[in-house]
Image (tube, rainbow, N blue to C red; front, side, top):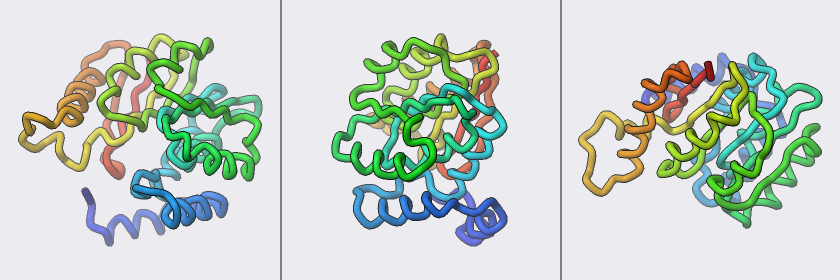
Length: 213
């Protein structure tokens, strides 16, 4: 769903930072070879993720939902020299595709891939995070939040993608639409939880920025 006209979206892209060449290649190959390429963060949101990471200057980054690795590389752009990024996904068939682009970047040795269910993997990561990007199955967003929060450094940032869910969050809820129901609850949790302060940005399909207090 386009929340802005395509003309405005194009203008915004033209007047934002350019997409790095490696990410442009990844973007193109994703659309050529991978199912559901619209899941890619894409040029504009990628530049937003990059800018936020550069402002935060994280050491430890966690990404839930790797897809083809585009957003991971964007987040690495602001990572400190000794930083690491852990990224989790369930799609075994994408691991080699991700690794190819990770190794083409200067952060290849700092990016660690985890294959499996994030709810099982997160408890095994025994260190705290400065930046987390949640972009996986919406049905587990609340579970992810409760798992992540105790593992965040004070002042750390949790980014949550797709929180407007193609505008379904303001439409009549269908009885069988579990994902929208959970996202509505998730957005309310972020609003009301006094351990974080949150702003919801109408970027792409909705991006929430939550700062840990």
